[in-house]
Amino acid sequence: MNPMRLKEKILYILMLLFFAAFFTNEGQVVTGVGISGLVLYALFFNSFKEKWALLKERKYILAMLLFFAMLLISIQLSEDKGRGFRYLDTRLPLLYFPLSIGLLNLRKEFKDRVLLGLAIITTVVCLFCLGWALYRANGFQHPEFLYNDSLTEILGRQSIYISLLVTLSIFIYGYWAFFKGLSGNKRAAVFIAILFLYIISFLLASRNLMLVLYTLSFSFLAYYLVKRKKYLEIATVLIGITLGAFLLFKFSPKTLNRFKELTFTQFDYSSQGAESHYNMEVSAEQWNGANFRLAAWPCALELFQQKPVLGVGLGDKQHKLLEEYKKRGFQFAIDTKKNIHSNYLDVLYGTGIIAFVLFLVGWLILPIIKVFRYRDWLSLFIILTLAIAMVTEVYFDRTIGGWIVGFLIPFLLTDLKKKRQP
Image (cartoon, rainbow, N blue to C red; front, top):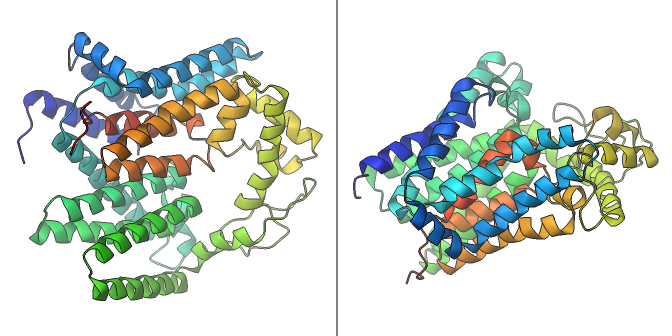
């Protein structure tokens, strides 16, 4: 592996500092300085002549910038412009990362090292979280501290965002284990890290991301082993997965509650039932993640139908949503001030069909097409995971959500040259 040049070393360190910010309070001065340093360094990393050439070549960057322009237009059309600018603050990474990171030409080796750095930082932080949770739980006497948001409470982060990073880290480790020629102790360490993160993913209990992780992992292993005609290994993997799932659900039944919720999808807008939690018995009278979304999503579609072209306005989206909740007698959602819990619907009803199409084209469709053409399967797995994760959460309403999406997608495409690789 070729050593990094000085410019790459500085960029690498700045990127690792940025990744560390995923697990800290974004209001800290050091976090703001670190991100500013990364963006400024990336802006001057290569010549503006090269950046202009890359901008003309990378059509998805233009779509990303046009999407951000639509956000600015949406604010101007909003009654509550102040709230619109507050929402814009968490979406600023969708502007400054495409303009800085997105206009770099980086080596694949460098990109791989940066992604490995993200996986290692995530692993160390998760080890710390587990240690802290075990301390709070007094071993296993109070196991509720080992699950979901309680596991990441010390970070001040919701478990869904850490679960996303855990899932991406497993894919990154898998890439290094199977395709980077690791051997001996290094390969063993990578597999130990993968096993550890699978356990953390289970404890975080993010249903959407667990299903993505297991589906993509199993699909890859099946393809990899069948292609090499390792049928004994296939049988071993299947037995291992079955046994592992049994043991996890046997000794960690609280996570199973998260999936039991999916059997209770019926809802009544006027219901005043309690909100389901992994640490309580699940029943049909409760509001849970599944039936809440099935109740809330039609509200967004109704608002979109009222203003399909430009939406209700970025600054007014939550106010209009609460009004729609009120019309339907959805008191639970009003009392808890729930957002729409879907990034796609949030963009659609908040900023309209034009912004929605630009978002899909710039941030998902063109990047997916490009990495598929170049057979960059790791990047494909990461972008697909981000795309699926955004189905059930509004990532752009959180700074960390904007950071993850805004940085990763442009970064993953920085090593793909205009000429297709063989």
